[in-house]
Image (tube, rainbow, N blue to C red; front, side, top):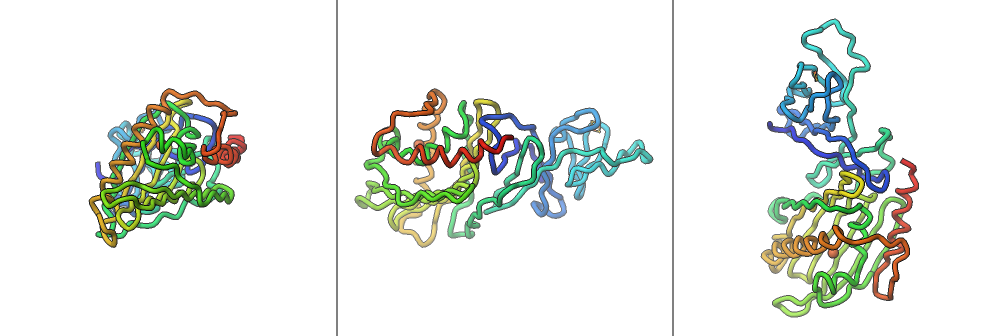
Length: 305
Ligand code: FES
Ligand SMILES: [Fe+2]
């Protein structure tokens, strides 16, 4: 059905070390595609039907397939078709805040329904023609979000797991509350010889990161990483890639860079699925700012939710 799909909600900030959230649905008006998305819990408050299996978006409303109760985008029940005199107040589905950035929909989820405490990352909108359409890749990982995100600052593994020729240098590691800016530089061997590489990552909260990755003037990609905890030790990782196609010497290399990142994440997943977590790891010079990263993540664990 156009404009309606089931998702597992992603908070753009963290609750606890692994949790399971309710299924949910995003509904969009058919008359105004993607004009005003809403995110509602999946199960109807009446008798529990799943609104994503047969529910219908009708204008700005969502109708349950089971008995026809109808809800607006804020989750309020606005009609019980067979019982027009029934009071409607207090009959509602939980609605979660959503935000659109760079053509991607994000949702805030909190176990007790708290409002967002910070703004979502500002993503560049890929310009039509200059950047490729999004290419999405999704992995299911038997791990926790901390392990996945820590990978961003684990410099030595790029050399030994992913086979990159050199260790990256950290040019910037700046935390400002829930926002963390990381910049790394690294040389890459290319068909045109060794080229300087540059990776700039901005994390906003624990789950969402925006990454720009360039190799000299040859190639550049952007991608958004989204980690969604599904269960105590199970997360979904989704990367949304866009390759620079104009103003760059080798658009083909930009496209190939996406394949390379996917290959590297495939390698990471094997590690994440099987590794242990050491609270006090035996680090060595060259390991990257792993403990500084862990300290940054503590603010989310300290929220007490
Ligand atoms: S379960 Fe949704 S209307 Fe009855
Ligand atoms: Fe990696």
